[in-house]
Length: 420
Ligand SMILES: Cc1cc2nc3c(=O)[nH]c(=O)nc-3n(C[C@H](O)[C@H](O)[C@H](O)COP(=O)(O)O)c2cc1C
Image (spheres, protein in one colour):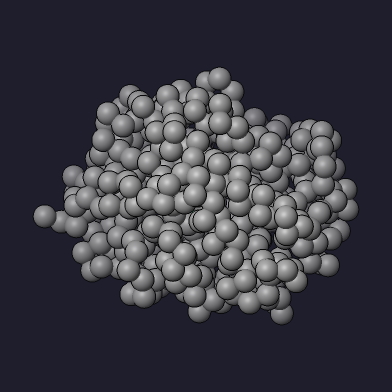
């Protein structure tokens, strides 16, 4: 039997096969229809055979979302309401993990005009922004969290995990990449703290230990608790960053501290398109809704231009590259005994089987292509050589940032519909 079809145990979660839907936002928000909006996508994905669905980043505090469509999981009631979606997915055989996090200094309260205007307090971060980023935060004060606040935040991660377990989710993943708050703690680019959460690789990573302990204590030691680890970061010249070896050490520490799986990823310290790679999202210029939403979000011409420049430069510097994290997940797999998740530019059945059969990773994740092809798992699991639909055009990226629904916005891509 191909490895792809074999089950895998991750903490308390049994996953029926090795294909997972990587976390991409659905723009489902936090309204009364959030569970239904998620179910509309996930039930079809599950029916098509995917083993695990990781729901996109959901925010543990009332402030801290990075886009208006991001779901809040800051209360038990909110998380329990999402259980309706999990209950709809489970009969189709897939497991569901909830990804949890916070945007830190890149929360939308920093840049998205209506939310910035209503911000209740300063943005939170491990330290004040590096000096050369400060002009971008002139109108959004940043508060360096106290040690007590960091401990309380770790506790909140534990609470959310326990609510997730109660709601039926099979596990959690920390949103610890993509320049979000946990990532900001891990990287020396942002973290210049002098307390127990700053300094050496181990001390910066010790937020992961505090969160892991809180999750074990409140949701149960066996509850599947997984983490994304930034490895070999890109950072501006002469600035500190997580090197390849630092990232590997963080993977080792995550294993030592009881995480049930890791997803090592190459990232930038900036919230640019390093995490997706691919084309410039031309949708901003062509799609009327996106254009309007961007103008509403970016209050000044300078801010608007900065956002656009970030996209263009990011995309030019990060062209699509098939399986671009291979070097990092393969090395993590070689060094660790816990399951290693692969993600990033994996598209074909051949690539999926190649990674699994040669033991380069234990689970293989696909992200964006699920927008264009919700029944993609059937094609991969069935070994079909039908051409893939996603063109890595990244039209979905600004849409997500501006709070639109998670779907493929490339007019040249013929979409399939989820088999719900
Ligand atoms: C629109 C969009 C939203 C994303 N949201 C998240 C997220 O919430 N959490 C996360 O860890 N990664 C997120 N990602 C990154 C994906 O999980 C994945 O790592 C990335 O897209 C590369 O995989 P792919 O080439 O298969 O799409 C997002 C990517 C896209 C395109």
